[in-house]
Image: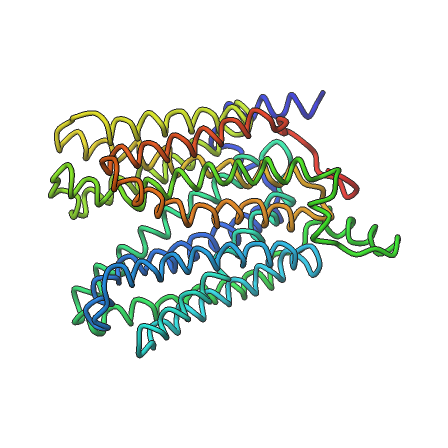
Length: 427
């Protein structure tokens, strides 16, 4: 009863929760938050470098897009693998490895002498990109106490918008100072900086006590963490439903994010799309959406928050793609687009952490989240395929509504986990 009172009391204070964290919790939060910021920075760099890469290597936009798809697909495998590693060798150690991995391969992208080399470096970078979230989200979810888990893990997710903004700022500066033949390489060279975070992790962040106890329990019984246990009869339903949940969120996001610029330029004839102001509206909306969603996770519950954001994402997509509005309104609608389509991800970390047993939490969380990413990687292709028969706007709308509908169904079938205390035995 006392824990429930604490949850209700703190739910009414969107910011005060951070001051109540212990030093160990704060150190872990900043480490995971920083990792996600820098992960986003390295991932988003590519989008700003595409025009220069196309010119330097004399490739097509389709060739450049294939690099993005390959990165997304390898990130799915990286997430699955890192999740299993975190159960076997530890959350902190796996997080260190994934950060070093994506930082080094981003750096190497700047030395690529051909399209093939860049493709390989970027695909390898994706392994670390996917793995970093899998290790960081489960680490933070296990360290933060139950009443603040939704807010803390959700707030960590907001780091994506900050990393995106840093990448945009770096690109603006470098392409203003250097010719594009040098600027895109310097942009990737700056991607080595996340490796510095490893020193902070080594000094200030420890393994979660619940994970240490779970590993000791397994050792005492002569067993080891087994990735395949997430497909056992007792866990299979959770694994399937969480895969559907993440497929819906990421399928909707990539259907919108991949094709919306083309839709606005080709069908709405918007010139404002290419301005920094439009991008700023999206980024600010995303950042605030993450933070509000993080607070709502502990305020109204995981399932209700997913359903709310999914429903509002559908409404936003319909407004964008089906209703005739002027350019100014389209610019302003960038805020709710970023707010809902990005903010929905704040609930993923805490929800998945609470649904899987400690002994296979990394495996389950890494597999479920990145299964959704892997499926979402092909969603933009199907949107393009359907656009041969329908308008691009209607095609985006069809797949976005379908994806968010899947998410809502999965959320309704999964149990509410708000306030769940994690244990070393089961949950």
